[in-house]
Structures are given as C-alpha cells and as structure tokens.
Image (cartoon, rainbow, N blue to C red):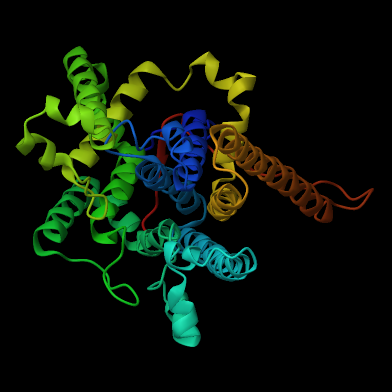
Length: 404
C-alpha cells in the first residue's frame, strides 16, 4: 500500500513547531485575566484562536509520526507507541489537574481572594471532594482552562482505528469526519460534563480539525495544493480574514457594531467555540492556506535565531502547555493582589513566556542527555566488533505501509 506523506522521512517542518509554539504562547496570554495581554493573542483578531491551531497541528504531526512507526515496525507497534503517548498526555493532565486545584484553593484562601474559587470552577471540590476528584479522573470535571488536554486525550485515544482506516481509505475517513461534525452540530451530540452541562470543547465537532490535519499529512495536502497556488483563493481568503477581524473586534468594541447590520453581527457573535462553528473552521482553513503560500517549507527565515524560542516551545509542546496553563492562574492572582496596571500586565506576561521558554529548553536538553546515556548503555565494549546495521531504504516523499 502506497501512502504519500507530506514530508520526506528525513525532513522536519519547522513551521509546525513554530506555529505550535505560537499557539502555546497565545493560549497562555489569552487565559490570563487581563485586558491588555489578550490583545497579544489570536482570539481578538479572528474567529479561530490558538486552540484550533493546536488541535490541527496535533493531528498533522500525529499522522506523520505514527505512520512512520507503523511503516518501520508494523501497525501493532505503532499503535502501542500511540497509546503510550495517550497515557503520557493523560498523566500530564492529572498532575496539572491536582496541582491546579490545590493551588487555586490554597492561594485563594491565603491571599483572601474567594472569588477565584468560583472564577476558576473549583467550588465543586469544596462541596464534594471525593466525587469531584473521581470525575476529574474520568475527564468529566474540568476547572477553568483545563479543557484542551482532555480533548487531546480523547482524540488521540480514538486515533489508532482512525489512522488504520485512513491509511487505506483516506478520503472516505475524511468524509466521515465531516458527516460526524455536521451530525454533532445538528443533533446536539456532546459528552456530559460534571457537575452539569457538556464539554466546552465538543470532541465530536473538534475531531474535524484533528482528522483534517492527519488527512493532509497523509496525502490530502497534494490533493488540495491547487488552493495554495490559486491567486483567487488567496485574495478571497484575505478578504475573509479581514471580515473576521472586523466582526471579532466589533464584539469587543461596541462603537464598531453600528457598522454592521444587526442580523449579520448576531450571526457571528457570540462565537460558537464549543461546537466549532463553520465560520470558525473556515477561518483556520484560510489561515493555513495563506500561511502555506507565504511561508513555504524551505523559507530561509524559519531558521533565524529570533524564532528559536517559539520553535523550541513547539517541539516541547506538552510540557510548555501544562506550564502555561498553571502560570495563567498564577499571573491572574499576581495581577489581582499586586497591581493590574498596564506595565504590571506586560511584565507578568513577559515573565510567563520566559518561564515557558526556559522549560522548553530544559526539556530539550534533558531529552538529549537521556538519549546519549541510553545510547552509551548499548555501546559495545572495547575490542568487540561493531555489527553492521542495515539501513532503511527510504524514498523522498513516499512510504510503503505494510498491511497490519
């Protein structure tokens, strides 16, 4: 079976790391209770934001990584590697969940900010601690801003059979994803949340972004490349992005609302994030098309030193994301207790991004050390002949995936 990958086996697309790092930074800034820092995130300038980009890139990279695992060692091995990653994400979420809950409760009490208990949705812990923790382990209870990782766990957990089918019938899987998306929106399908309501990120709708990323990585990019080349699509896309920015800004600046007819404004506001509104999906799709046209994979500026912190944060995205979520609460508390001025907000935001970047560099260094130690442990003793290692024959843009 022939599978066309978006990248040759030896090449890494720095754009994925760059924009995933940018999504992490944007989500941190957007989660801080500040009117100034939010203007440095995506959400004030269009229908989609960092979460949309994060989910899309996660699907894209997951397809690349685990298809290669399956090509090298078979479908069963690739599935075990994928499920191990699901476990890592789940454990990261639980650790963040416990640290977040205890910190919000302890620091709110210590610094006399009881409103934070309700603001960050920690009140259920006080009313029914055992039940709340149990529901947290089941991913049904999620404090404020802890919605993305549970979504990621569900999407990655369901990915093995999806990937197996996609390697054989990619277009049909993509079509099925679109049908599920519209059915979920039409019939109100979602997962239950605790103590009431449904998931803030509806997995049955948001799977569309994840599957789209995987489909593009496994050959869909070649199918739709004509959209990137089309000047008409490019200019129409820019017009739509400008419209999305104006409509979003109008929701934040009431003086702009008079520019648009009331019916038009209400069609896009409030922005339906829970069920991934079609205009929100289209916004991200156009950003991807425009971005691919303006920033090709071999753009020399991608390796410039100024982008390295973002690239590093994208490469260590799970750790950076968890730290960013926790720091968003700490930053909100600092601004509440010390100062909420513009200078204080900028300083807190800068310190948060610096800490996230430091964590990324530390994890990158730590992984290199662990890898070298592991390689040294398997190095043959002195005097023992080295056994030849057969090289994998790899094509530049095609990989042969054996039947599972």
